[in-house]
Length: 310
Image 1 (cartoon, rainbow, N blue to C red):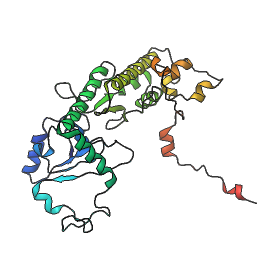
Image 2: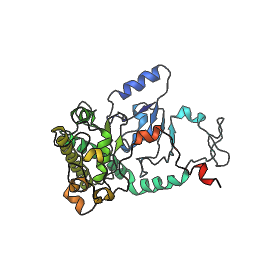
Image 3: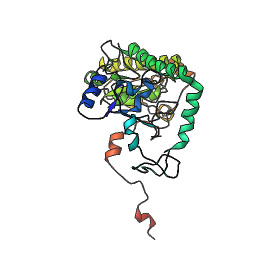
């Protein structure tokens, strides 16, 4: 099983050679369709050696990424694997020795009309343009941020595919700031953080897709550069490593309205780090939560049994 482009955000140039080796030894190549939004309209997995590909409808064909789903989409196979596809007696699908593999023959079928309408409205040229725009957007971010956060993986030409992994790991050595701190601070700037610590711990994987306009990309770039300047304040000792806007992020309205403010940075820096936020501000309702502690320490907030005693 391979993901192409790889989850490291690059087009592996030896993918056809890899598939040829697998085929030469009697194997099959399953191509994970998670990154199809970097291929649609430009290349088919079959062209570089794929035998099976699940086009999971997330990020691609107008379906959101994440949220626990939808986990639906066609499974494409080469001709000699067709007899091994499942069937479903109640859905008019071809008979198969495999039989049904799920109660719902089409999975989460309510998702499928969205992608169908998207493809019909976009057309072949539009779908190809979406792929090209996704790749261009990722390379634009990678290039603009390279002097502040190095891109961990690139092709030999220094470019990426549809996503780029920003390496934040060195910051911990110079400032004590972690990728999670940056992710939390992005909330103050009005952004839900990109993928955190996957596929590489201590990094941010940024995947703008084709749906983000240039203005939004520039807004994200400005936020990341401003955060890097905040980290520099920690590196230079202006702010302590354990008491700075990143370690306390995100900042709620209740936090800055509190009479007790004992932090070495101004309230304005906490919630309006860039001037544009004064015109439109997202206010987080919850401050920093210790995610790891909550995951590893189960506790009950129920009313104790003694409360029901007569």
